[in-house]
Amino acid sequence: MMCECAEKISLLVDGELSANEAKEVERHLLSCAECQQARAHFLNVRSELSAFRSTAPQVALRNELAKILAAGSLQSPFAPGRKSFAWRLGPVAAFATLIIASAVIALIFVRSSNKQPAVVSQVAAKPSPQPVATGPEPNASPAPEESPKKDGQKDQSREPKNATSPSRRPTPLPTPRPGEQFALNSEPVRSADAQTMTVTHFEKSEILLRSFRNVRIESGSVAEVKYEKKRAQQLVYQNMILRREADASGDIQSSTLLESLEPILLDIANLPEKPTESDVQVIKDRVERKNIVPLLQVNSAALARALD
Amino acid sequence: MASQDDEFTKLFQDFYPGLCRFLECLLGGRAELAQDLAQESFLQLHRTAWGTLPVGEARFWLYRVARNLAINEFRKSNTRYRLFDRVVEVMSPTARNPEQEYETQERKELVLQMLRSLPEDQRVALLLREQQQLSYREIGAVLNISESKVKVDIFRARTALRERWTQRAKTVGATAKL
Image (cartoon, rainbow over all chains, first blue to last red; front, side, top):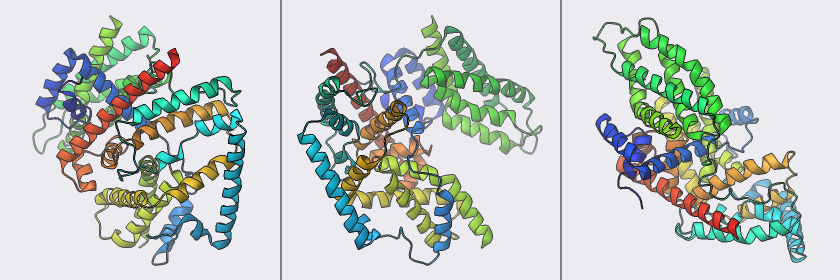
């Protein structure tokens, strides 16, 4: 069952709540385990999607740009309404592709019919081609309710084959470990010292950002932010170390928060000696938008409780 | 002209990799197609809107066009891509470090599999939020929908992913006990 505040948690992690609403949700978070779990999960999703790296080769980037710039009014190879893969290559290439494709398909069928386990495990471990076709069409995409069941069935059907076959791969199952909720959602292995330092760091950063938020500037005058600058310079270095440590130990939650915090600390540390109102306001807006203060408060409280 | 090209080059360098990543996730892992569509988006920008569009708007314009191109691809028959992917898959050489390669691939597949299970509008909104850090207002502007729809789509996407991961964890746990 999901707490009715779950939608607000989604808004909180996106920094889309007003200051008052955010405070209200933070208070609720402290006492609601369901919402704490939801927030952790939402942050894990963010972490996974941010960590996703494109497999498209980037080396050709400059060439592609040159093509685009040179294309001008010429017919582009990527022009809208481009033809199918085979036709673009020309008839000879299309024919060659068909021959190769037929040969490979024949090979797969022959090997499958001979029940050679190595091929079975290799194909099973690769992405199934059917879901690739998923899209907005309701017919093509699997029904949301059915997906987990289908996944489960696939996993179950794969496991015995892999378990009994001499798989070429060292890790036989393309599935997370038992009890794993979201790939990186395993228990973080961090020393108590590191966690204590992280708690202290979160608390210090929270105080700094609150102080920075309260900096008042008369229009036309310069802001007095010497204390905040100095404090941010001290905290940036520690932030980097703690972030690397959290990354290394798999503590995604702390790592994500430290990653969000770092540019803000850097911006404050690099403020000019006499910043203008707009210099300060830009950073204040970012702090508000990222909702970083409440997140620091909630995380330091949660970590401190875990340490107790 | 030269300075316009310089600006375009900078825009390309800043946003091309991110656009490829966005499209790859949106298209369920078809990296080559993602790259094609990203290039096509930039080409359309260069041909039609560059020079008339405020520079700050170019990013949103690109994502809007890229998303529309991706939707067109969804609507086409995908048989040839399936076949082509299968051929590439079978013909590709074995990874140099199979264990590491396998784990990385496994993680990516897991993410893509979960994303594929989401309806397209939820998937796009979530990707624009999590990978491009666009605000709800900006996402609304890219997708031409209201902020409240963006809010609902993102929340539903997150809730659906959460349910699937929980379900998956239970299934895997049950399988392991057998």
